[in-house]
Every structure is written in C-alpha cells, then in structure tokens.
Image (cartoon, rainbow, N blue to C red; front, side, top):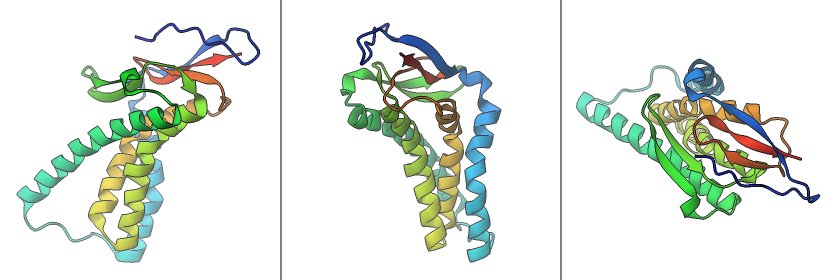
Length: 192
C-alpha cells in the first residue's frame, strides 16, 4: 500500500499528488517494444563484426540449465539493483523496500515505501537495464561472445517496463519528491 505521507515542499507549502503510473497488465506490448528497440543496433553490429549465428553450446541439457539459471538469477538481481540503487541514491533504509511477485501478471517487483527525489528514483529504475542489459551486450560485442550478447538482449527487453516508466517521467523535475506506486509501474509525483 502507498503510504499516505504528506510531503512538504521547499517553499513550506504542501505538495499536490500526481499519478505517473501505468497498470502493469496494460503495458506489456509497449514495454516489449521499448525493450527490444535498443537491442537492434547491438545485434546488427555483432552480425557485421563477428558473423551470425554464434557457436551454440554442444550439450543442450547444460545450455538449457544455464539459460534457466541465468534467467532466474538475472530476475532476482534486476529487482535487487532497483532496491540497492534506491537505498544508496535515495538514502532509504532496507526496511523501506518490499519485494515480491504480482502473480496475476507474473511480474517480479521491488518497491520502495517512502518518497525520494525523482533523480534517485530514475537512477534506480534505469540501473538494471544498464548493468544487466547494456553492459553485457557491450561485453558480448567486444569479445565476440554471443551468449553475453543474448543475456544482455534478454535483460534489456525485460527492462522495457522500466523504459516506459522513465519515459513517463521525462518532464518531472529531478528534485521533485516521488513515491513508488505499490501496484502499477511508475510512481506518484508530489508537485508543488
């Protein structure tokens, strides 16, 4: 539940709440597209530099096991990166973080229960795409490692909902206070 904290602005007046969230169930197609779009240049560059397809693993069972291990581990790390970044950049204690899965949409989540500066919130939203998506794609491209590229592609696509949240906040001042929305993708912005 979104805690109904009153946020006082810098000028002493109380802030007005504006909902910058989107229902998770309604964002799947757009999120997928936003996640897929940044992967296209990497796929093209990999293909031009190293050829296609890359060498598959010889043992299918090992490959399948490693895929599921990387997928499940990556999902956990994705949510931890949101929370850790909010804790550091937003200066929030661990007790303000909540983790879980929205079973109706099969969506894992990390949620901060307290408001923070919009810049810190944005950084926390973007961090999984950077660490699990862009960095592995760059490493795969630099080393001709198709598996790293694939891992990065997978987690860049998985960050599509995060890209949608960042896009929805494009006009919000970085110093504004925002509260992560407990049910939807996005947040509540406290505008002065």
